[in-house]
Image (tube, rainbow, N blue to C red; front, side, top):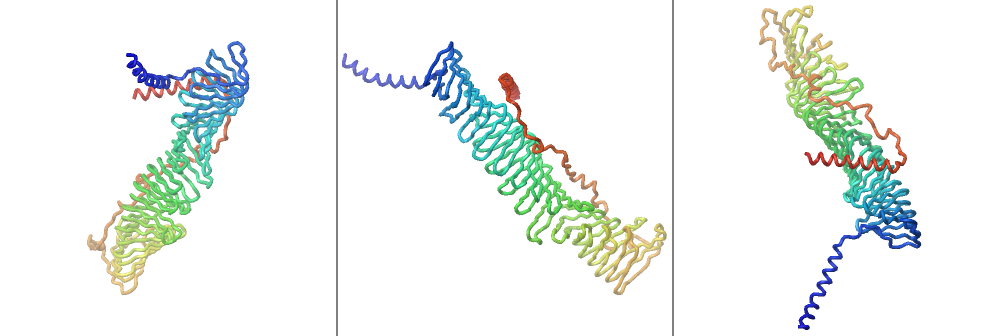
Amino acid sequence: MLKNTLKYLAFIFPTLLLAGDLLAQTQPKTKFLEIQQADNLKNKGNVQRLLGNVFMTHQDILIYCDSANFIETENRAELFGHVRIKNPKDTVTSTSRYADYNGNTSLAKLRDNVVFTKSNTTLYTDFLDYNRQTGVADYFNSGKVVDSTNVLTSQKGKYDTQLEKITFTDNVILVNPEYTLKSNVLYYFTLPKVAETDGLTNIRSTKGDVLNAKKGSFYDTENKIFRFYEGDVENETSRVVGDELYYDEQEKYYEGTNNVSIFHKDRNLEIFGDEGKYWEGKKYSEVYGNALVQKYFEADTMYMVADTLISQDSEIAQERHMLAFPNSRFIKGNMSGRSDSTVYTYSDSTIYLYGDPLLWNNKSQISADSIHFLIANENIDRAFLKNNSFAVTTDTVVNYNQIKGREMTGFFKDGDMHRLEVEGNGESLYFALENDTTVQGVNALLCGKIIMHFDDGNITSINHTINPEASFTPPHMITEENTQLKGFTWRIEERPSMEMIMTWRSPTEKDPNQKNLFDEPNIRIPFPDEDEIEKIINESVTEKDKSDFKVKQK
């Protein structure tokens, strides 16, 4: 019997020891502050005065300082001189010249030269409250956060060490070697080094780039990727705007949606649309959706619209162009036109119209299989029409004077056509008027070359060479057949107007008085007292409870 009992005890005793170890490991650590070391200890009432090389613990927290007042009945200690509070498990360490540590609430009030470190992120301030239970540290009178990439400062801040998130408010400034950012609300995620802002945000780069957002932004500070809401990016050569704007600084690539505009400063040319992409290195842009281009001249502006607008600039002159398609229409001064597609070559300021092209100038309509015209000294200088060229001009009583031929060249002065030359198979119909009111008859002419002169949109004379064949039809013999050349069509209803252009897209005007945080001085507020801080904390908690309640209600 005794032998069996010994065998049982030999079996059960190690099991009991193991169970005891497991039970000890699962027991909660004491919530009370404990003194581990001090060179000197003095008691004064309910306060224990610790002097020299003080070392205390609270659960997993290690506390070091030069001296301390330990109020055991309140489970609280006042720490003085070279204060260091460390938690090895969550890598949070703080140093300061003074701290008030409450063991019941795990709240440390750190004051004077506070340095708060979590992994590779360090917070500097003079007034910090750190709640060890929630892992949240608050500062109320200016703080600075430094990591390997950025330096962030603000008047107020909340560092959630569990979420690795810092909320900066009031006069927020983010600085790295390439950019300086200003905002009034900024959320910084310490591990990916990503910053998000609410409201007005302004950024300046060391290269002179300017980035702005009215409704907040996203900024990947390591990969240099930006996203702006109602934002714009401007540099020496361009300005890009969009309701939502994406910018990859390393790739020099922009992408915008809604109310997009791309301004090419070298060309004094701006493109608007629903969506846009711009490759700054290639100086190449694409804009889609009710696209509009405005080419700014000193005297006026040329407007062009299409579904898609593409602009290509280049060091090679022959590669510089703009393409508008399909259903392209334009207006410049008294000249307007339409075609399926339009090409504007920057090198020689020539505009090519393809696909059923039409031009209107004052009272004239011009058509051909292909048309191109030259802009010189910021005005239309000449228009070239090839194959099936046809020109129609109305007179004072709305008759249609017509001229057609294989090729035509129109010459312009101050934006108006003053001469039209026809080469090859020239035909014309011209109504003779008396006192600009009464039709005297119709002049018909067949000739290899015809030259027509205009004044204020009206035909003043017609010259012809190379064996002309002329005929005259008196008024009583005029019929529809002898008043229209073959191929005649009057398509004035297709002529673009400024009302049509603005209905297609009306660009949003830039606010000249737009607020910019770089125009405001940096502000430093005075230290709040304990009552003020307590009030701020309570208000912050109240607002958070309200927002949480609203979320739950939804």
